[in-house]
Length: 450
Image (tube, rainbow, N blue to C red; front, top):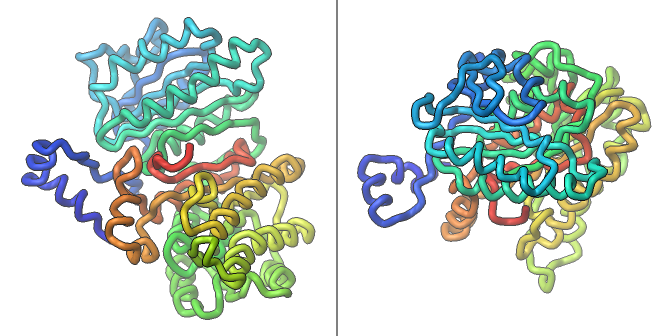
């Protein structure tokens, strides 16, 4: 549904009134459009430590305008504060910041450029995992990057975002895939996040269709976020199998016909759901997206056993049972990808959602626990935790709560189903095996949780 406040704040009259009163003025976020050729449409600025040299090798694939800032020009055009072009993307390598005194490099690099960012600019800081540092002072300095990055992300304006990527030794070749996502509008509603990249043996062969030749299963695919995920996976080249309950058959079949996929109607909580699903997948599957979920909200004092059991059965037990069956039967193939749709409620909690929050936190725990075991087969498993997303469900929330949900983020607005779908599609890519056991929040850096 339309966000009338953003519509008003971006009108000529609204800009004057909002500015005069001192209210927040969120901008309409730029999102990925069909036919776009490069991740970054505008100048990219790079600076900092040795990891930038790895980025230099593919920087011209990201954009045709590459600049450097700092002592080492890296054979790129130098960027001069106050004189250089406005920036659309920024990458700073802080991996060699190993002592408190060196943290000043963050201020020295970012302060001069903050007034030279285009609307919707995307920034990324690179580091090394603190837990891998042998020197406690080095570990401390690298962990300090988290506080800095999350805080600076909240200071950005005009739809700007910032992420921190910790790059393990040997994972340098995974930077291209990560930066293609985080420097592009595909990550428009993601900010203030911290992820770790590890080595991955399966590369992407075609960045225009990174999922070509892969078979993907999406549960709860008939409408809303599930439908957006199915459409985005198909756009990226996957053969998509859509699953939903029998009552959603008409919507499911219509979507399958539109994207060239096929549909399965199945109650994922049925006792025989696992063998039925395996029977429908004789050729195996490469990607599993557990999107199906329900809410039955009540405070715990008023929570009925039926409400509790239904939410835990659909949201947590079914993904556990079905994924295990797909693994044990060999239906989920080696180097596969599993994506679990969690929620920021599972991280921060939410009044009246003890059942829902428990189920979503359980999915996050499942990803963490299963990651090292599935890694032996090259399979990654991650959770995506949406915040306030504009769907039919949120459209029925009372006005005051809906407005609060929209504004309680650094970006000052709700996300779209496409934002969640883009994150899922990225985690489904072959190269995204570099990330496993982690949770990626798609919440505009909501004030709820970390």
